[in-house]
Length: 186
Image (cartoon, rainbow, N blue to C red; front, side):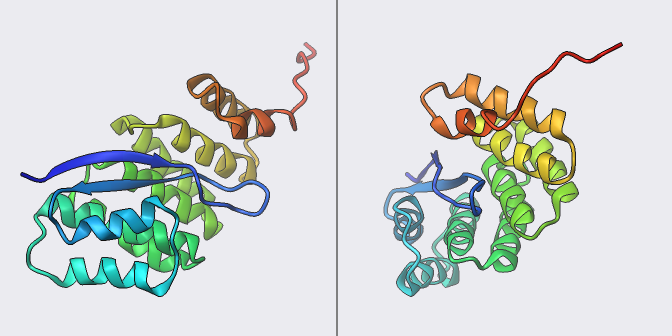
């Protein structure tokens, strides 16, 4: 029996302030398992994409594993700086499984990389409403999108919430150090 396990990966870089990405594990004898391992381990070589393509072109994946494999190929593509192709993979995964929160988180990351911040915020709002395994990843990416779109207060709140949810994760804490919180004069 195939099982779907969600695993968060915090590995994608966006210059000095890059988003995290979430891979979706395919457990069992599925061809999609190799694609997941490449995504999980941060591999970006052509053989990583080839493993995903082989799985996707086969007839053996069920709908869940096909959606997971699309997400995983998208994660690899994000790391390869192939942002538009990654976005297409996340969109295809969402078309198959609209409630797959991690696909929405990664879609938000791709949109940030494409400087489409308003769309990214919407995708991340949806992801967070769906309850991803690691909401701090979606909050961090949404904070980046908010900051880049000029919503400094919203960015601060998202970085703060990500730090609260993952107290051992240094990334949101480092981002918060850039902010100075002052009382508002009335």
